Length: 361
Ligand code: UDP
Image (cartoon, rainbow, N blue to C red; front, side, top):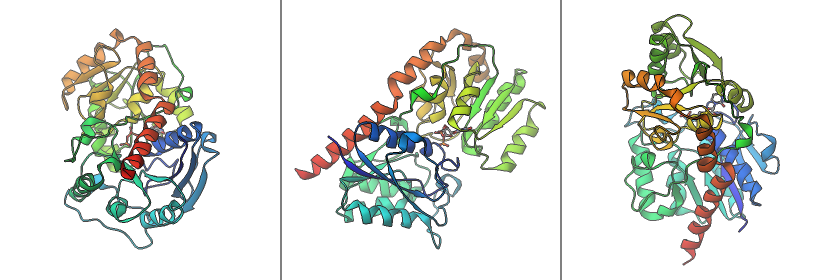
């Protein structure tokens, strides 16, 4: 079944800025995948957004304004705040205005307002929840929406969904990547790698300590959200351990990423998915991760990498020393099998189609 869909982007940063984190790539995958499956897509996003050619057939509507603050950097009891000239209500306003002529809206902004408004509007808004529960007001509104419109909510992993008290079994859709954008690399002698927003919840310090104490180099990619935090980590390890590689395009990122002998993922929070875990595997790089959040579901110990107890740096070191036991082709094959773009878009479509059908009964 082909649908006409509106997609709402993140209210933090523009697509391509890195400020939106993994949602940026997830959004591109959803749009490209939905188009590939023959759907019509209109994206409502921030001004300045850059989309790859795979999204060329999508109609794009842009708005400008003030970003939302990221929930993960606020107190758990922080109230919902909407700044003057905020981008969030503008995204919603545009989407609802055009949404009347569409089958559904797929919302990727992790914020209170689109969730709250959902039961009150005729247009069917579906929410792909991109974060675990870090804020009580967000947890509360998701729990409430689950009671009235459970089928409008979907999650990336079971660990992420477990942060919410849902009225029914969580709809879990994983994630998807265009595997053609990632080249398999066989080499096993390369450095260690780490990628993500440089921000405390991502736990770069643990990976840096592992590399430093093992006399290794750690290549680090990602948008620097917290400069002070980045400098503090650099100062705490042996000089030259961290090789800052910047925030690169997927094309350049995967080229460098694939040269690593292991990828370390050390989240300090309940990571919703962990795009970079699958991206590393797509390049053939085994992943050593904390058994916390999404990565705990994505890494198959002894097959695509190793999982260690959260915050256990000694166990991380042991796992790094065993990385040559992993066959890099397993990683690539596993990534293709579980997280390809087209299949992910298919899961998104089935979720929306059955959500619409349920409400017609
Ligand atoms: N990323 C990138 N270039 C880089 C480093 C990272 O495009 O140089 C992207 C990566 O592809 C991933 C995102 O940054 O999609 C990080 O997302 P992840 O899900 O790992 O964590 P989040 O930021 O959402 O917490």
